[in-house]
Amino acid sequence: MSAYPEMAQITHQAHNCNRDLAATIPTELRSNRRTLLTSTRWLALITGFCAAIGACTEPPEAPKPSTAPVYQSERLQFPAQHPQLKLLKLEPARPAQMEKIELPARIVWNEEKTQRVYSAFAGRVSAIHADLGQQVTAGQVLARLSSPEFGAAQAEARRAQTDLSLASQTHERHKKLFEIGVVARKELDQSAAELQRAEAEFERSQNRIKIYETQTQVNLDLALRSAIPGVVVERNINPSQELRPDLAQTPLFVVTDPTNLWVQIDAQERDLAYVKPGNLLEVRVPSLGERVYPARLAVIGEQIDPITRSIKLRAVVSNLDRSLNSEMLAKAAYQKHIVGLLEVPSAAVFLKDRQHAVFIAINATTFELREVEVAELGTSRTIIRSGIKEGESVVVQNALLLSREIKFAEDSIKANQVKNKP
Image 1 (cartoon, helix red, strand yellow):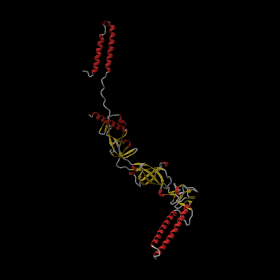
Image 2 (tube, rainbow, N blue to C red):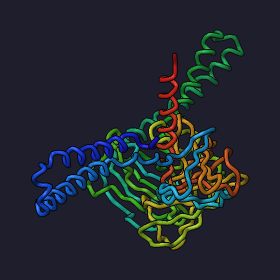
Image 3 (cartoon, rainbow, N blue to C red):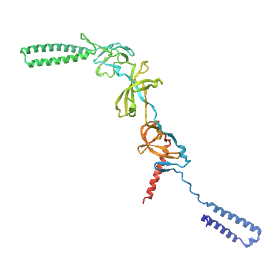
């Protein structure tokens, strides 16, 4: 029996067609040789047409082998020479190297060596004795004010001194009279209380004015002095300017030591594991080129900003040549040492169901999906705490292609389970 019954049937029909056509040729035409030759050609043409019809029905091709990868036990195996294999790029996991981390920073005055001068009394500026950039010494007069309030404070101090003297004499007299029984205990106690009130008022009034000047007589001249040696780096006062303490928002003078500055640094939570007071830092200011200023970390803040999730660090930098100025933007870098961890390119790590994972190359055509524990996720490299071994190759390019193939395989398995479910 023929392997292709349909083709055999068509061929049989073609033979029957030839026999029937030959039977329809008249007897008269058979005797005529020329006519018979024409009929024979006609019969050959019909026979070729029928054979062509039969040739159009070709046997079905054998099914081609599947090129889809096989997914089993978290492993994806591709057939050899699969086109997607050329799109994958691999890199080995290696021990984490020492890295230089740059943090945004800002140069500010050293507040431990800075004084902001205000006036505690209202008045009018009568003279200015210091200007920007001027070197001053401790106790030097920066400006003078004509202040009626300061005069009133001096008069109050003098009056408190007089009241204290009178209260002291009264208490001494009551003490002697009490000893001889002339006055009662109540009067003695009242004089003692009055003396204490007079002493407190005298101390208050004296402390209010002695930080400015010790006056032998009451006057309106108020001197604003520098309490520390340094340089006047800010001046917000003009001749004949009216000053009111309740409206003062900016200092009249700022005196500081510009050769020693602070560096305010914004660090992230992950940086706290690698920095501590005393660490050396490298400070660079973009506007000053590639010059490096050595600094030392002094203070680590105790509070994390709830909005920016940053924490404040403070370092001290030397500025002997005065090339740095307050409010300069800078970069502070520290060396991060990592021991016992591995690193891979960040492009190799992705999220799978809220868990970090990578694809490990078992061989040239087989890849394993493996979950990993991330110690630090950076922009260019990621530090891995566990999940992979040193030297294992991870897919760092087009790993999403593998994830898509796994998704297709999982969906196909679920569809078959639903289909076969009774």
